[in-house]
Length: 225
Image 1 (cartoon, rainbow, N blue to C red):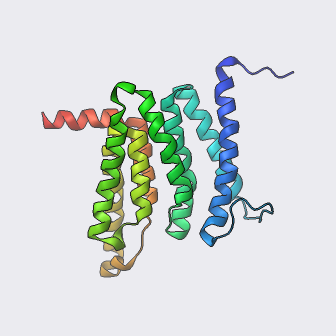
Image 2: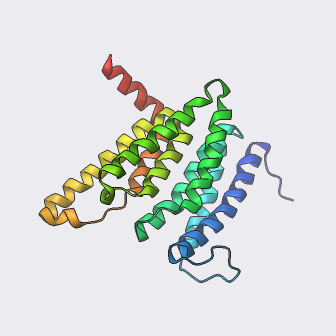
């Protein structure tokens, strides 16, 4: 009889829940861009992408709970981290970010982040509105360079990351700028016609903020003193 150590029980359960989400996310990746019903019973074979997405979601959910335990913060972080996996795949393939995943994830992350620190419940709300509003302003100024999906993803990041969304966006735009300069150096003015998905850069920024968001904020604050 296999006995699961109590220290690993919560991550194991989280991993199973993450696997369930990953199976759904894989269906979204495969079917949503084509306008097909996501919850249809018959599954089309789509190579190894589906199992990879499901496995990545299971591992991510288990890792989040292993590091943060069963807390409201863990729920907010998991809502963001799990959503980033299929979002990056869809955006790379189709230049789209699925509201079907981002909007419900925000609805989970925002109250979870508020409950994680009730004394500052308003902070994730402000950060979600601020990051989403910043991206919305960029979309209004230059619609071809930014999609509304990016706006909603930034709002999700603000809800889950709180103030750490500031370095997350800095990393995202820094990476996007470097790629733009590389394309410009390689292709010249033709690079302006190249459509580059921004979702992966936002995801990279979010991961950087999850790993070192507070130290990045502290460093930035120290440079202003």
